[in-house]
Image (cartoon, rainbow, N blue to C red; front, top):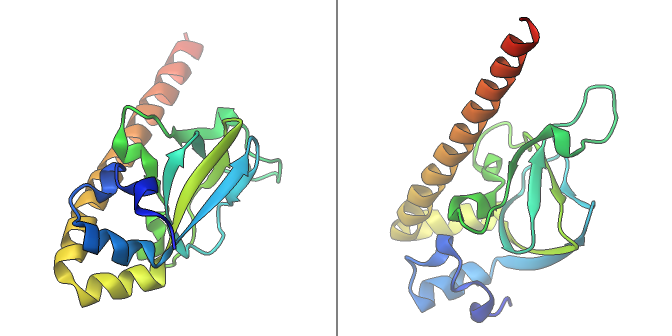
Length: 165
């Protein structure tokens, strides 16, 4: 089981008691990645919710020509100052349950918490209070991601406008 001390200060878990946190940790694992390694790829089955514990992770879209995604294709990256950026993989709750972006480790190493989506859904159904608080937090994460996407689109439109002068 994942030790409580490793995750108790993560923003996503701050509204949960020690007992509730212990229930989460039974369905989690910790994984470590090195710079450049993918955590998952766009289009792969979305079976987990992910939380960055340490290091940096970038969310990228893959190029249609099969070339691997580089930082220029980044849509979002984890920032320690923005707690909502720690959480990704919410596609595990939305049909067709496939990852919409790829995730890559961009620091020398990164450590992530991987929460089994099937077991998490069961936990939220079993304890609606846990489910409500978690989903309330995830709505903030989704809002953060949409804001990031909006900024990327505005930047893209601005670049196109400047190039057409």
